[in-house]
Length: 308
Image (cartoon, rainbow, N blue to C red; front, side):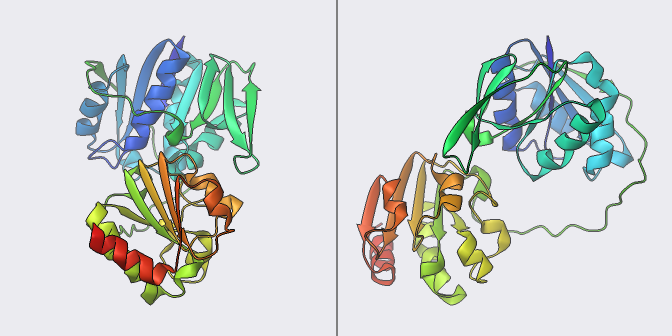
């Protein structure tokens, strides 16, 4: 039994989500192969080869794969998929764009967002915004799976896999790369940060949201926001944490002015330690918080930052 993991990367570095996906693949059992589809991505292939549990890296290097267009990466995976029992991708925007295309072409049912591996054909995944866990068993010959990265600890270093170059597919012609806007920040990337400071509707305005910056800076934290705060224009879209945003599970999650709607809890309740600051003592966020402070955030947050 061989398992194919499709690596998420930017042609320069392997994304952390790939390490979580490799860890999930290792729990299934069998040889784990990693497909690096890109352009000028030799460094990514070498990084993948050094990950524990990887037995082979397949490098497809071509112009059509340079920008990670879903049609082309899916075609690359389909070119070799027949030799595998499982095809795994991270449940990120990248993986969610590619996996359904592979599953549809293979005529199999995709298994989305798994959080544990029970056996080679049985997995668990959250449903109803994480309020229930479904156990899913698949009899498909090839199982196409997306992995919720917060459900698996990242695979470590220590591998010495061989890197094999394979023929890159031609451009499908179905889509084209136009442009990319990369948000630059001194803070850690939200999805992989060890500490996250998030604000909600209770912040009141985009200007007030800046109140969280000294606290985030003291903690070396990424900034996050609830959907209500993003919809109100207090914070940018890429800060959104929740069912329709990013799923995070940091060592420390600080929720400020967030009531704790079920959609938000679905995106952060696996955090190791949750601290909530809210003036409403009945707010649902206190139901999942390890530490709760019922206080006016405009007084409490500066005091916490000063104490740090």
